[in-house]
Image 1 (tube, rainbow, N blue to C red):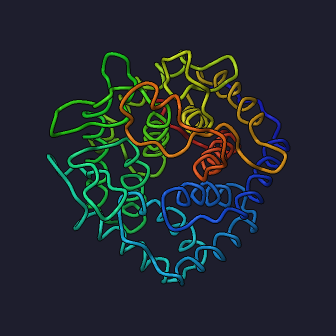
Image 2 (image 1 turned 60 degrees about the vertical axis):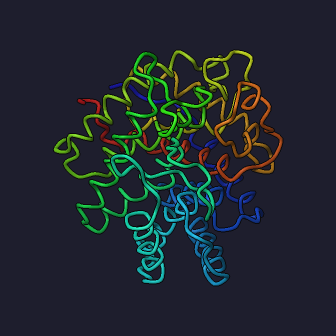
Length: 349
């Protein structure tokens, strides 16, 4: 099936640098923290380095004591690290918050059409009847993980339904690439760009479904996910730059290379374990390692991005500052690399 070549010491050293820099970030209970701490949780799961778990517990306990914010799709991203904390410690307080988040998503969150989650970032109805690729990471992937962990079949089916309809609304069947968002009121993709990080959210979370869902092949929606991911990764490999990265607008050669999207896309390729993708993953290892600064900051990560109005809107998002999602997705990628030989994969599908 082919072997992935990498320097394990370089990767684990980079991961430890990222951990130490992430510790100094003053992130609150929202999606930037949720993605960053997901990466830290993954790093603990793969390496069993107690420093990752100890920091997560200390900081999450502090944030819980300060009080949770209003629940939205975005704030549910924090649920990922709670799963790791609950499974590692058995402390019921983490499960209580997990239940709070899943109850919100399944019973209270705004939906449209075929029970599709509307993307929400605040208590206001910010984006009426819009679905964004971001929701897959923040909510659908979380629901799937909790459904599998608790044996809640209805929750699993709800999560898979989110994947199914996000694929229908957001993936361009001609190119295999994903749009950032879809407006169900106007029936269009708004500005209609293939945003890099949208494709990261889709590819990464779809690549995880078959690895965590028992007997995944028995679910018709899973077969839709397999087909979608295969088409997407086939398209994405042709858009990788010579530096092993992907651009913030994937098919725009004048757009800058963006590291959080690149990490998520490369991680999906590593998790999928198609041997034809090995050379692309290996290029990404070098590309992403070169963007881990000496102080552990993951560089060239674009800021938070709504569905922008035009090409310049995406191209002009600043990539100067450290971002939680950059830290988290780089860790997720390095974990996928370290775990490459241990993952069974779903190559037969």
